[in-house]
Image (cartoon, rainbow, N blue to C red):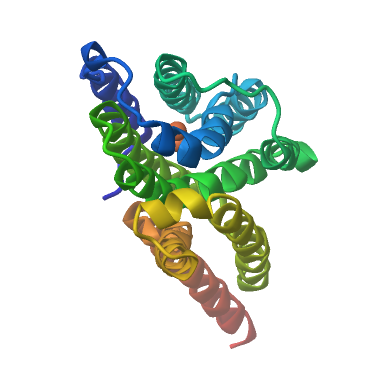
Length: 271
Ligand SMILES: [Fe+2]
Ligand SMILES: [Fe+2]
């Protein structure tokens, strides 16, 4: 489903109003074995969710000025708020269960630098959506990895919201790529694959303990993420948005009409 940017703003607003009802009253509900198995993994994901999104906000404002899409910065602001909420609930869960927060991580540092590479909106959200596609498979596995009701509720909510984020980001990437010639699109897809698969290998290997407890072998995890990526990569194509396809079709026919009229003017000149 393709939403207008204002519809995305309305969606984020609505989603924020039906905030997570996490059963915090249960208190610490991780066993020692569970804590040992998931601690490092959850620390890394909590850090990854935590971003002020200052660069992203700047790119979003530039996009709005260039295209007149005034609702986009607000949608991005609300997306960042949602990510910070993810970081917040994970941090609270970790604190209750005696898991320390980390301030720096190797993959997180690479991701943050990559997002601001060349300082463009497209690169920034391509990197973000890469992590979000993987998160769609990771959080259900994390949920299965323990018997914690609190963690399962958190994972369910984050998983649902990441599905929305991926949809939002892929639609925006399709808009950004509108009008890009075929060789450019081929290079774009190639570069995104180049980013996605090594990232997936690193995440799959470094979080394999959680995945295994969540009943996902590394290869199952890899296959599921690959499946999601193939579908989401297709959603990043401009023709996946009917409005863009229709506009392109009408532009093509307008060009054909202009070409025909020019041809008939030239023909009449020579007759
Ligand atoms: Fe998130
Ligand atoms: Fe997200």
